[in-house]
Length: 318
Image 1 (spheres, helix red, strand yellow):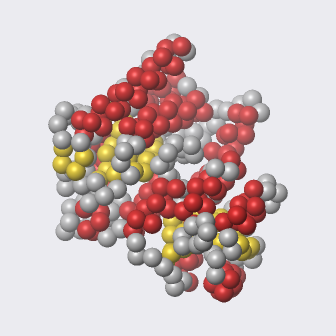
Image 2 (cartoon, helix red, strand yellow):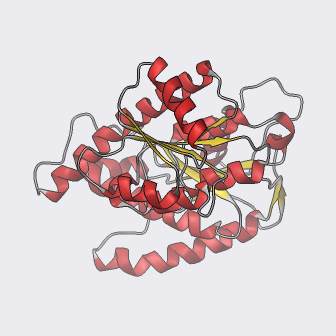
Image 3 (cartoon, helix red, strand yellow):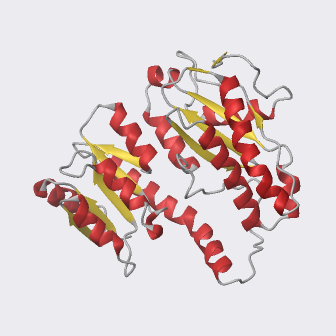
């Protein structure tokens, strides 16, 4: 795995490179500024497969660098691990929303560094089939793969706030109980998703889910959020630092965004899918449960018989 480490402290870059070599990684480059890293990242020859980016750098900080890396077409899905000595959760959140997949705190712990790089390897493997499918579409070859499954995750590379399921779970696991209590998750689902999946080939089904996720993201544009599409026509939004949400406003915004899609669907003789919204859920302060169960609970809420939001402000349920 070719790794590019970016930190404006050359001594730390040398230390990081030594630690990575001790873990068995040999193909490592370093850069001391954002522009230098972007020059290296721009080449398609022997592309970078993982970025390790320090948050606090000058003049371009790590968060801005992540945004620019994600704007490079062949790095929209490349794993990015942030480095930070900060306890400022706002910076960490901003890094995730800019497109980072994980983070490590300074000083470096070898065990943690090993785990985060194994996570990056998993992301590379997870993206491989999506890339393969995309290449076949571009070449107009057969695109109906037996491995495509209805309950499989759909990766969204160009939807604002979209992250992989693994990245959202990583984010939740990094938060303390009190912070989790201040955030909530909302599930969205297409009740006829399986019908669309069987009717369409996997590529166009993924485009359909992407359109719905784009509408959901726009309906939440005023709120810091992350999105993931874990499968079965589900979309889960994690609203950060929002223990209370105006669910009626979200439904109104979503209806407006879906209406904007209606003409496009009508032009191809296709009915605009229905989207159900679950009640917001959050983790209890003292409940002994894994933080990642928040995602599963949000999905169940969207599938509940009365899962659509009501027309008044809802408190996130514990």
